[in-house]
Amino acid sequence: MLDVDTPHGLARVYLQRVESPRGWLVLGHGAGGGVQSRDLTAATEAAVDSGFAVALVEQPYRVAGRKSPAPARQLDAAWLAVVERLRTDVVDREPVVTGGRSAGARVACRTAESTGAAGVLCLAFPLLPPRRSGGNPPESRLAELDAVQAPVLVVQGERDRFGMPPESPTRTVMKVSGDHSLRSDLPAVAAAVRDWLDRLVA
Image (cartoon, rainbow, N blue to C red; front, side, top):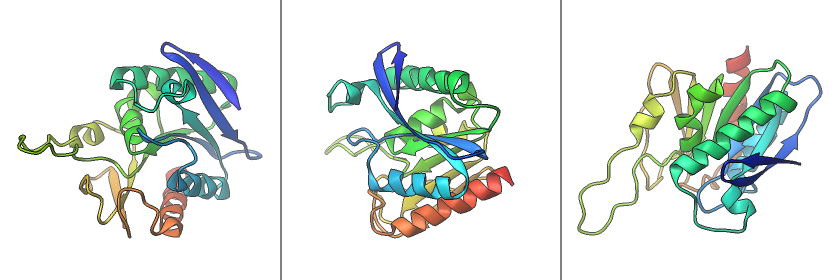
């Protein structure tokens, strides 16, 4: 475990090392959950099977015991501080792939260029915000995905209430059974992550 001082408090990083890693996978959690979510666990196990070391990042608001997520700019700033610390003190010369679940995937997309990510893994990307009764249709977050220049994998439940992102020349979308939780078919989640990481560093 590694504690990292960030501009918005202490972040906590749970490290899973492997011998002679092919790369590092740095993953963030969703807005209301932690790094123990089932899909993050499945992705972690798949990455380790593929020879990747993994860093699971707990944002400062979670470390401090708060349930409500911090504003996006604070999440991004804390994430950047963590990745910089990892590159300085933990990662050698291996490629760094960033990503996360839901809100954590959004953070990874928004910061992909600044972190120098070799790829971005999005588990249950929340394409559309929740619709408010009587309000205008929610604005898509597709621009956050489209802004990523590195290869992207989106693993999305077929019944995700937040929508299904489209594929693009640099973005692969893997549809799996289930909803936003991605709990229905964890082996499919793991297989998608494993295959994509293998291709990414081949």
